[in-house]
Image 1 (cartoon, one colour):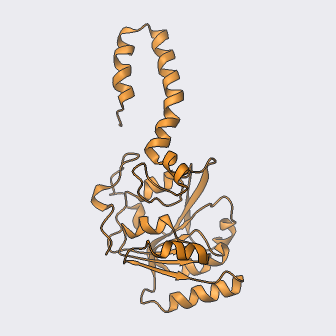
Image 2: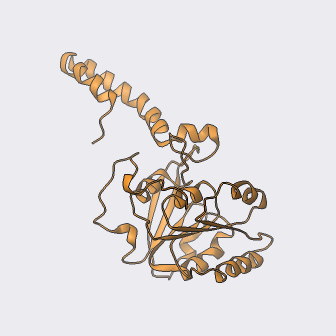
Image 3: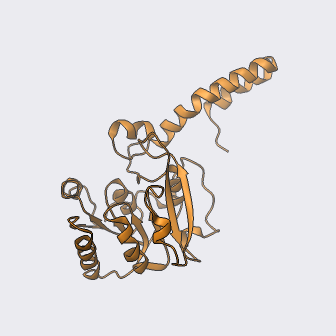
Length: 248
């Protein structure tokens, strides 16, 4: 388990102070220090002021719930491909881990803003949001023009999300996953009904946001991220064998 300075400081208090006093000190410290430590360790504090999802060291994070990111970051994406509907900080996070990231963005201003920050293994496309039909048509056209037919990770975090479900399922590899962010605010449940997929909901706080949200992961049997041989990592700890590879 994680050991903190608090544990070291509290040890002699617990040993020498009366039990009732030690209990009060411990409870008070836990109540006040826990949210501060969480905000610092996760990068929530820094994300709030930067207005972007980052770690405490300033590295990019997906705008997923922290429990989902903690789960995903310990998986191995070597040789894997990622398809994103909606790009940004998450694009950089995936690019540091996967071999290829294809991102479709519907906001021209945001697309132009992030275009210059993308590494070489990111294929960024602007698609129309004028109407649902036009959006689907342009997304389909872009994907049909690619050499990559299926993707190991598909992220629905933008565009017309309900319409992207059909495309995501059609483009998903056999052992792949579909990540749906802000799952509590869109009717993903109905959209995925009858598709033979299981779901795990990761509830929790999000970088720089006050209220908790849900990031849902849809998958079929044998999905690579649920390999039981993957060791259980510690919170706030990156998988050192699989993090921040240089941009290709």
